[in-house]
Image (tube, rainbow, N blue to C red):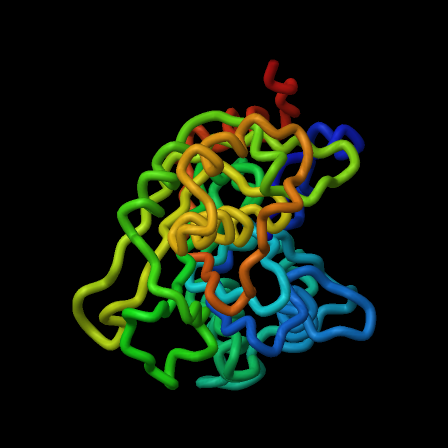
Length: 304
């Protein structure tokens, strides 16, 4: 899950080499066969695949590093991931013959990645990032959707890699009551795996549970969660608590009381990764990017 809040050890500011161009990448992937976003030795990850093919397709002399808006866990999907990469255009191998590509760097990279990438990851657009853009720290909101097929849903085997099956019949109205009670600025420690130096304080701007009524997902329950940032396993833990309420194993008072915890709650189940998708990342207008980055890098004080 996204761990976008800085720790005290992270640098206060980033400066680009004057020769470097920062590119924004809009990315989608099926997380089924990836061990998450972040590069890990010996494992297939989204970051690892993208960095490998960016270097290969541009024939760069040095490895590149890409930074994303939300570092998804193993098995989590993305429809609207955003990342940035810094490239020295002078090191890029240009097309050698007509029709071999485009001399415009973003178009050249997009065309080459479209041809080269495996079919479970796609770069949907490449653009020159505006000054001050940082895919991680400039983001103002991340939107995730978690999808559940419960006892009232029509089972669709074609969706099995993107929907989690819960055999019980879930009460969507009581789940939604719990979800809306969590909105606002809170310490979500009960739902988060602790990281040294990281805060669990988040602003949950939206949390809603609905049952779809049309299309191939008719009957599927969707949990729409939006926040400035999420800590590790937070969304899947939120949904785990909602499922406990929806089955009647826990009541609404229990769900609301979780916000009083200052440590992770052992009563909450972390839902499987396959039901979760990063749908969208939002950014402020270009003239507010620098201010947003400074705001996001400031560690929040604990709530009293």
